[in-house]
Image (cartoon, rainbow, N blue to C red):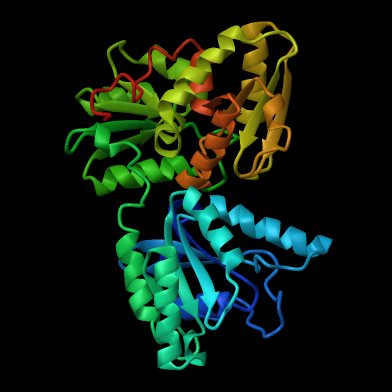
Length: 412
């Protein structure tokens, strides 16, 4: 399979995000081009050439699929546009799994870099400090500055030159070594015995993308195949026939959350059942917090404000799960006059503290780190936060019936 094919099959949410930070003209864009082997970012001697963050996906052996993010200088101008560029760069702080902080060789005052370093360290991410444009100093001067910075930051400093490529390979190898173990946890195979039989119930209705499966279905199916499990796919209509042809009881049935109740009516009561969205809640977030927050539905009051958060943009069709199904089920279940807002995107609205309950999508289009940083901010405000699958399970009376990390012994 070609590199292009691999990249097409690996969305950003499945890639480690490597953010490149530093002052203007520190060599961030040149480094990104050197690492990717392409002119992915505009390089110029004019300060402020990079405005919005520039994303470049690639395969970084032995890590696998990653995305480099080139950012605008964190010392940008004080006008409105400069402040906006700085804000966009700082947003990458919460998205990055790995940060490369660049300090240009010969820099005298590094107070700003120290502030950025402290901010990045708070996110508990892999952080490498690069001494860029190393070819502009003599070997003696370079060694003195390197030693001074290592004493100041108490960690290894990597001198590099994107012009001569000196130090790039050593830095790349160190990055890969330190990044081991950052991959997202498995979705479902850690719950199952070897060569498990799993039935996937995947309704192909108007909400299903034409000619494709939704991402969580694809990810679960691929993971099962990689683990040598036996995955049987069917629709809700064909589910009884599929069960009759299996010849044995599946170890697990996984379905879309909106048909929990219909699937449950077909299955014996002792059949392990869960949903793609519930599995994504365990992979992308803090499951116990999501589960407990779903109980908040029982104590909602008239005129409470509820926020439904979708991490990706899509054209809403009739009976959309976030815009119609969940709001309709909430109002029917509670009988209350609820204020329900929809927010689309990986960020959070400025007035997030005004809501009594937040219901997130499966977060398949953002990374676990992005989602956990978002969840951390809401937890600090004391907000109840759950996700689509758990909310629908609660609203359909299925929350105690489904298999979750809290009642399956395989979950650790």
